[in-house]
Length: 134
Image (cartoon, rainbow, N blue to C red; front, side, top):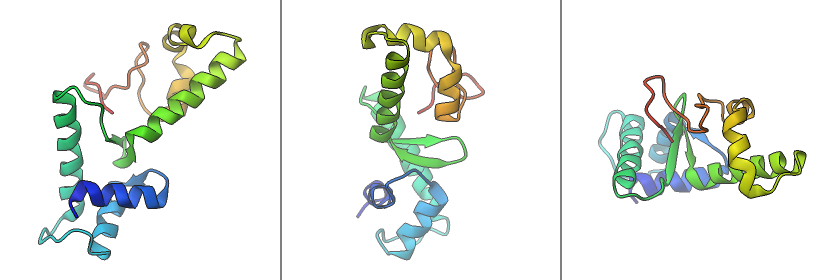
């Protein structure tokens, strides 16, 4: 099994986001990936980061996301969070879903609480340097 496959296996088993160090430890403990690395968690983090960049360069959606603090999640789970937020927002304001994005960027505060990260007023998560991140 490869690092990314093993990470997905651990995440699906946990059914929640998990810090990359814990994923790396679980992979090694269960012998899911053969490695001689002295820092398997760093190897895992690098593999996920490179996968995210590769998929972005190819115009594909990310498979994994690394949240602040090194917590790894599957991107498909994040989409579900956004969908639930949009449903709550549109239901609360009796707004059609297609108008939701305009309100979404104007508000911003609920997003910060929901995602636990920096959210630009346009609704895109950014790092301190202003670069967009998962």
